[in-house]
Amino acid sequence: MDEIINKIVETVSEGILQKIKENWGDVKSSRNEKEENEVFSITDVCNRLKISKPTLSRHIKLGYLKPSFYVGRSPRFTQSTIEEYISKFNEAKEV
Image 1 (cartoon, helix red, strand yellow):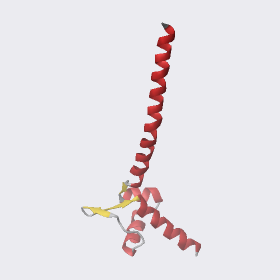
Image 2 (cartoon, rainbow, N blue to C red; image 1 turned 135 degrees about the horizontal axis):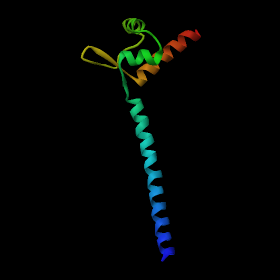
Image 3 (cartoon, rainbow, N blue to C red; image 1 turned 90 degrees about the vertical axis):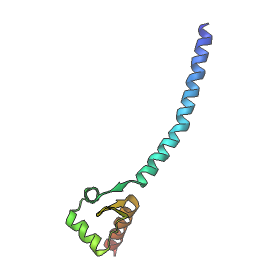
Image 4 (cartoon, one colour; image 1 turned 90 degrees about the horizontal axis):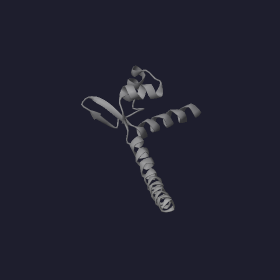
């Protein structure tokens, strides 16, 4: 009887572990998509880039950084927009 119970527990455990492994890939990919689609405010961008709000506002006015969209009058930026902005400044430093 104990052998049968142990075999059932082992089979169920293997099935659960397999399902977790299958679903873990879905969780990881959805998390990556979420990070790519994350939206940042001016304060968020300033904190991430360690620059002041006046500097960021000046760069927006000069066209170095363009908001992805606006919520009311507040600009919002996506991760890809911020990465483009950073790459522009890295290229300018190299020249």
